[in-house]
Image 1: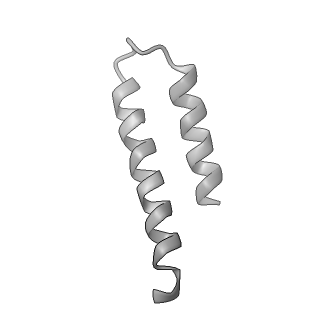
Image 2: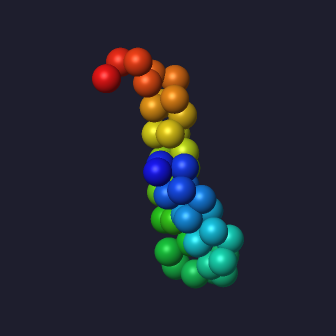
Length: 47
């Protein structure tokens, strides 16, 4: 599920023009989601 969300944000960032005022915000959200996914994979046994 988290990977689908990351893919959706990646598609949104790719589709949005770079000069759009919200482009950088979506890039940062995408990066945060990817970092969260990596954290979940690395520490999946700590639930």
